[in-house]
Amino acid sequence: MVRINDHYLKLKAGYLFPEIARRVNAFAEANPEAAVIRLGIGDVTEPLPEACRTAMTQAIEDMGDRSRFKGYGPEQGYGWLREKIAAQDFQSRGCPVDASEIFISDGSKCDCGNILDILGSDNRIAVTDPVYPVYVDTNVMAGNTGDGNDRGEYDGLRYLPISAENNFTATIPSEPVDLIYLCFPNNPTGAVASREHLQAWVDYARSHGSLILFDAAYEAYITDPAIPHSIYEIPGARDCAIEFRSFSKNAGFTGTRCAFTVVPKTLTGKTIDGQIVELWGLWNRRQSTKFNGGSYIVQRGAEAVYSPAGQSQIQALIQFYLENAAIVRQQLTAAGFSVYGGVNAPYVWVKTPQGLSSWDFFDQLLQRCHVVGTPGSGFGSAGEGYFRISAFNSRANVEEAMQRITKEF
Ligand code: MLT
Image (cartoon, rainbow, N blue to C red; front, side):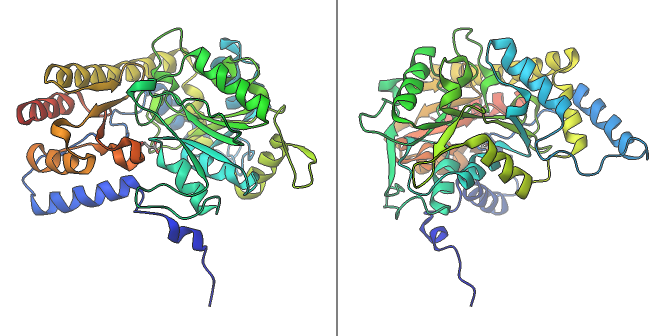
């Protein structure tokens, strides 16, 4: 009989968001009259920007014309998109990123997991606690951890607690780690990292030969001009960091699928016998073998994000969700909740009231208010007693949800 990947059996619960969906669906089935408002998963609700839709419509027309039809595209993504990303997302901020170092994909979540293909299985790995669960679960699946305990922590991972006491930015470990996951603006806490904090990580990584996996999927939500948008704004980062970016949260592409990963050509790792190898070549080989590039139509849509019209339309979208976040913050603060994040990020991180556990608050919110959020403990044991509220919803739903919550709690 076929053997399975036993590491999957170490995974603790279902993946967080399907588990939430399961509970919400059960509630909705039992209470069909309840108007449930979903502020759980960070999924966008507003329509795609017009500039993107126009470009995709044109691209569909291209596909219907023999002379403009596209078959397989480059596995790395089309040059015209990679050039625009390099110029407008990086070089305009003084980051020396070349178009050839940008790999277009169908999602940052996939890339965060896929990157493990090119890394060894004996790295010492650090994650924050709480953390975006994909970083942990993909390492479990790859066999990079031991078993999990009742708190959902896995042997072999180094957990760096983040809390209000350290502004939700991890203290740099005293011992060496090889692989470090950082996410800023942070999912789930909505915290941002100062230039000094990122510089300290880059200095640490360079002195230990570590690799930082920097998830910047929410960078577009940074409003404070002092906060870096990219790890490559930090001197030395080209020698120690891979960055993940997405069109999901800035341009509403969660259902359309487009993202990219930056792998600088200056990054290296070592083989088991100490030989130095460039990571770019490995990732290029991996993508060329296992991926056929993103869809032409979708990449044309992503390209339109960089047009003047696209830029102003995505700014309006981001502003809209940030205003939702501000409403959540204001209303919950006025009702006596302790709230964090939600200023340079679309997530508000809330202390649960009356000492409730994260899942108890989740259940009460669902039963009493018909509002869905995400239990903080689903992001790690240090998230216990917290709750994440997403600003991705219509204004009417956010206002209605806040009214219901502040009336009940
Ligand atoms: C979240 O809610 O944390 C996000 O939707 C996760 C994701 O983008 O994959």
